[in-house]
Length: 127
Image 1 (tube, rainbow, N blue to C red):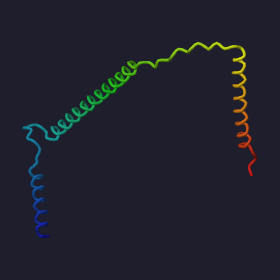
Image 2 (image 1 turned 90 degrees about the vertical axis):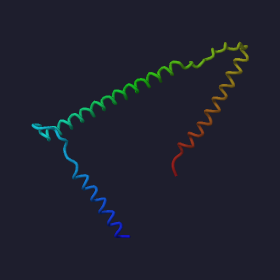
Image 3 (image 1 turned 180 degrees about the vertical axis):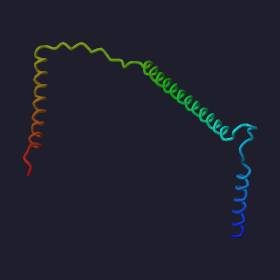
Image 4 (image 1 turned 120 degrees about the vertical axis):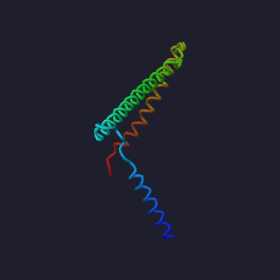
């Protein structure tokens, strides 16, 4: 079992070194410096990648602008909330008006008294 594993590992290593040994720079012709050729290839590839990144940035900006425009169009197309007109004030006799004012005053006083009790309890001295 271990011999089979060892043989398998050696076979994989031999294949990978053979693949490395077979790779060589492309033939560029007489009078052409291979390093300069490779540097030019790298420069062209970097320029291509930069142009592709710029194109992607422009496309992303276009999509962002379109989505903002679509959102604004949707918001503009919404129906505004219908606000009902205030109904005219009901006509009451002076006695009814006075009774309403007095009950409102009593409600305010009872609310104030309740709040005053709570404030007094909160403002009590600490033990």
